[in-house]
Length: 155
Image 1 (cartoon, rainbow, N blue to C red):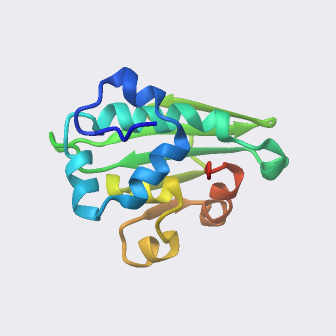
Image 2 (image 1 turned 135 degrees about the horizontal axis):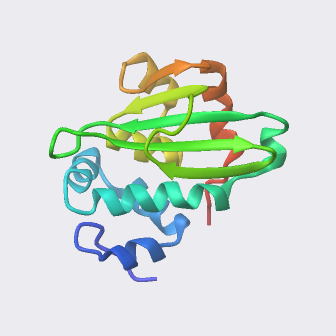
């Protein structure tokens, strides 16, 4: 697949990106480029694409009988607002909706670059937490297990 320019890609092109290609691109970008990308017009389609793919990458056997509602807040939108999403796991099913829906078992708040690194498993969540870039409210033990419930595609 030819390299895609995330800054100029259309919404449809972003939605069609293979998750492994996205991870490869993130690994090759310095933080400055990631920050510029997430400050640009394609932030919303990129974030939407990531969240809407979560149910496909979810492995219910890894979550076991856990029921959890996580609220995700990605700070630093150019207009000063945040992206908000809810990821719910119940009865072996992962569902995702925009906004904060229901009572959260865990709330996660972070800037967009840290979100991209967290989701692609290219960053260290413990260091993000220790340096205050990742904030967790509620069941912090859940935060430690959550990433293991999802595949991060590899080549």
